[in-house]
Amino acid sequence: MPPGTEHDFEAFARGSQRKLYRTAYLLCGNADGARDLTQTTLAKLFQHWRRVSAAEHPDAYARTVLTRTFLAERRRRLRDLLAHRRVDPPPHPEHAELRVTLLAALAELPPRARAMVVLRYWEDQSVEKVAELLRCSEGTVKSQCSRSLVKLRARLGEAHIYATES
Image (cartoon, rainbow, N blue to C red):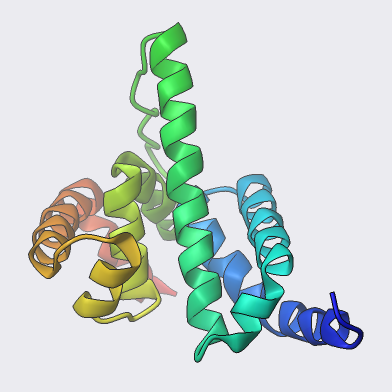
């Protein structure tokens, strides 16, 4: 790596690490997984820093790497789980705070649908951007997001009441 580029990467990593972590946390649903995903993403970005730094929007490039890494790891883990044991759905929290309830509801969505919901509604990305990022059609993003929101609303039920009490 040419001199000076390490400093450029360090500055980029410091500036984008928190945002990458927040997105990773929403995707993973836990702090340990989010830290691992963020570090893996930053390691991949460092390996290809010339290409990343030449990109028009390095933050979008980083988000793409983060999302694709998450999906690849989930597919790999799911394959391993299915090969070794039966997969049971996670337990439903009875009386949890809204944040915990929302994370539990997000965890019930398939990884790709969860990624679409997080990118579309948390990251406020357009349908076109999400479709490009996940390499699928815009119609797929719209239909998956719509179905996922129906599932989330059904799962959350009266959880919106807790949001207005504080």
